[in-house]
Amino acid sequence: MTNTKGFFNSLAGKLAAKFKKSRCAFCSKILPEEGLSNRLFKENLVRKMKDSLGEPQRPPHAIQEGAPQWLVCTSCFDKFVNTQQICGACRRPVPPTEGYVLPAKKVVTKNYFWRMYFSNPLPYVPATTYQGGAITNFDAIYRYVVGQQASWLICETCYKTLGSPFDSARADAKKWWGAGRKSDHVKEAGPVPVEDAVEPATKGFYLVYRKPSVGLWINASSKPNEALPQEEFNEICPLIEDLATKSLGTVLGSDPYFSLRRLGKRVVPYLTKVIDYPNYEIAEKAVKLLGEVGGKEAIPVLQKVVEDCNIWEVRKAALTGLAQIKKIDDETLPLDTECPYQQISEVWTAVIQGRKQLYTPNTIYEYGTRTMERMPKLMIESEKMRSRMWAMLAELIYIGLNASWDRDIRTIKHCPQAGKCMEEALRCDPQGENVEMWNQFLKAYTITCGDSP
Image (cartoon, rainbow, N blue to C red; front, side, top):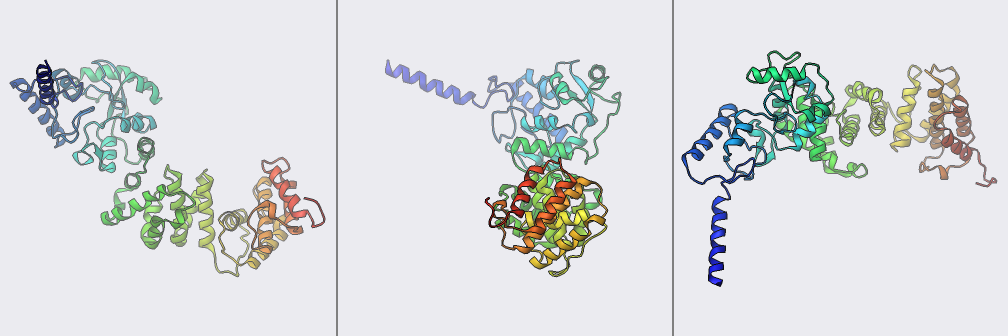
C-alpha cells in the first residue's frame, strides 16, 4: 500500500513538473506540451511581437520570469495579443464595439493614467525598457507612451475616473472598432508634445515605486537643442536621486550632496530642471545647491521659485540662496529701497531660519536699525507685507545684539528696539494670522529682569 502511494506521489510530481511551463501566460490554463497547433501558436506569438517591436516582451501576468517566449492559449491570443482589445490605462479586456476612444492628450496628461500604467505589468514597450521584470529605461518608456499613438481605447471605469469628458468618445469607439482600430476620425487626435505629460508621469511612477525618476524628468523637459552629455548625465542624475533618500537633517552631511557641490557649475543645468520636481525633498535640496554653486546666473531661477512655489521648505532654500549670492562682504549690507520686502525676506530667512552666518552681528544690527528708521517712507505693496517686514526686522535687530541667541522665544531677553518693531507689526495688521505669536514675541522683548515671566 505504501509503495502504491509513493508511486502515485512520484507520478503526480513528474506530471506537475512536465506541465509547469506549459500554461497560458495570461490565464494559466494548462496547454498540451506537444502538438502542431501549440508550436505554431508559439511561433505566431513571437513573430507578432518581433514584427511590432523588434524583441519579445513579457505579456501581462506571465508566470515565467525571464523566459525568452511564452505560451498563450488561442482564446487569450485572440483577446490580448492578436486584437489587443485592452484598456490603455488599466489593461482590462474591452469587448468589441465597447469602451471609449479619447485623443491622447485627454489620457496621458492625467495622473490617474500613469498610476494605473505603472501599477500593472507593462504592455509592449521598447525592448531596452523592460527586461527580466524590471524597468531599465524610464525615459524611453515615457517617450514611447506619449508619442506612440494618436488616440487611446479606454474602458468605462477608467473613462469615468480620468475625468476627461469627451462628447464623441463613445461614438468614436464604435467607429474605431469598425475602421480596424484606426483613429483618423477622432477629433484632436495626435501625439502629445513630450513636455506636456512629464509631471503626471513622474508623479505616477513615484507613487507606485516610491523612488524618484530624475533622469526621466530632466530628459523629458529638455528641448531637442539642449542635449546633455550622456556620460555626465549618467554621473549626475543618480546623485540627485540619492538626495531623496536622506532626511533633511542629515543631507548636509551626506555624500551625494557634497559630491554634487564639488562638481560646481557642471551641475547647474541639471539643478535648474528639478527645482519644480514633484518630490519636494529633491526640489528643496536642488534649490539649496543652486544657491551655493549657481552664482549670479542662478538669481532669475531662484527668484522664480520664490514667486511661484507654494512649498515653504523650497521657498526658504531659494530665499537663502539669493541672500548668499547677493552678499557683497561681511561689512556691507545696504538697504534695497526698490525691493525692500524681498531683501528683508532673504536676509531673515538665511540668518534666522537657515542659521547662516552671512554677516557679522554688527552688520546685521546696523542694517536693522537703518531699515527701521526708513520704514515709514518705503513703498510697500500692502500693510500685511509691511507688518511682516516689521516682525522680521525685530528678530534681525535682536540677533544682531545677541549673536548667540538659539532662536527660541523662551530665551529672549529685554530689547526695546525689537519690541518697538513688533508693536508696529501688530499695528499694521492687528487681525493677522500671526497675531498670537507676535504678541508672545512682544511680551518677551519688553519684559524686564524685575518682571515675572
